[in-house]
Length: 198
Image (cartoon, rainbow, N blue to C red; front, side, top):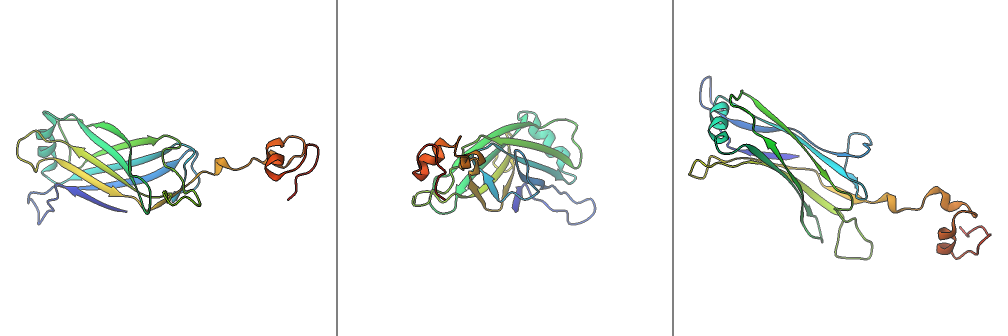
């Protein structure tokens, strides 16, 4: 995962002006979760994008106080861009209260976006127009009304590539019963009352 923040003024020594942002959590959580890694997403079900970030440095309280006069919320937005053929799209957006003042050093925030089922198409074999592989990106943005460009606060985090599959589209285990699996018999060309050919 890569991430970048603006402003980015690293400390050069004790007492020097500084402000730096970082993501502390960037993850995909399926519903229900299966393990800790989510490189393959079930596109037929909703999934969550969970992030946490903070700003630290002695300029943090001053910077956030100045922006909070006119801007009350962070805007958190998630995007999906296909690798290969397909169309990019916005997965969703949530607002997170800025809080304060007063503000601390560091100042931390969290957000969760729920992506509805069937938002990301999976790969369709034989269809060259969709790869089913996506680069997910999340941005956190705090707008500045202070005048000159440069006082806005923004962070960008890129996820590892993910593959979208929809296992829910498969046949249920009852499809192997000659009594209850009429749709399966029709797919396999069997007659009612007979065991479908394997």
